Image (cartoon, rainbow, N blue to C red; front, side, top):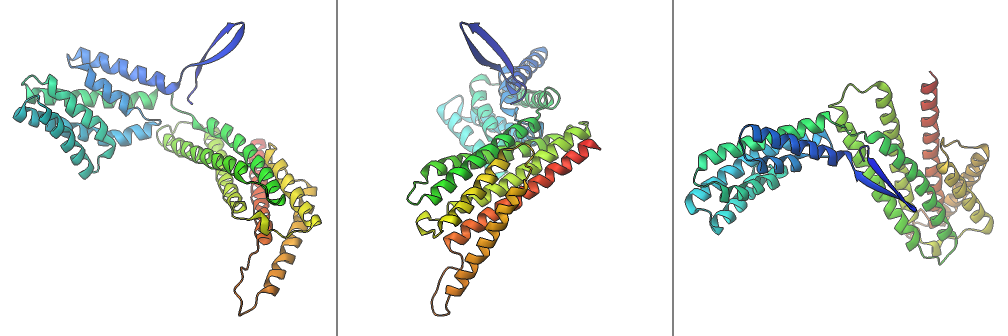
Length: 362
């Protein structure tokens, strides 16, 4: 995800081995620096190292936000552990009470992000306190602070994640997969009796991939708050990809309507089926293109589809009587309306790319 180092081993065959990623490298650096600092101050490294490892989040913003909860949570865990160790000694009762009350306290004080570190700190402190309870408490507070601080600084300054490029790559794949789902689902609808499970599986994967990309977009937006020195070109690139992602989200929402249609209830004539098939294929071709250029031939298909939509819509209106309940949108109308809605998003995509190209030339 964050600039990977690849080791190529060639031995009759080529093997691509992902050796180490940016986050793994940052974890190693944070652990090393934390251990060195603790050693210099004569403090136990283990607790600080555990804190440093757990604190390293995908983004610096997450590390800072969650670190603000983990420090007080760890202090609470350490205090409870020493209190129970003083009363019960290093017994099973001390471990149980320290863990339970630490979790309870973190939950009540809304320090959920610090619960894991605090609980680990609490139970790990009991066997090594050796009767010096107050000194052990102060030392744990110090080691936890060192681990949190080092991990956050490393995450903030070393190999800051660049999610924009990854989002761009994922967007390209998402558009291609969206086109494939549209072609497959349209074929299923027009071939009555065809099983929709195949395209439905692809569509669910498409939704999951979209959610991951939205999460990456959120990460990048958070990162920009702490790396304001990035040039305008990087910011514009991210904004462009974010807008594409938003349009992808709207496209996939429209696609979900295709799965509410029962193919057996479609009542399209042969020429109408051809219009639907050709329009869906034309949309897919545009989605697979790099610049989302809409040719004149596609607009002709949309005009035919639009005319067919209003014709079918009027037919439904004429069939509705006051005494008889009927759906105002037949399966045919829903299909036609969905394709027209998808076309509207294509126009937005084309406008977005035209605007971006104009800015590049300026």
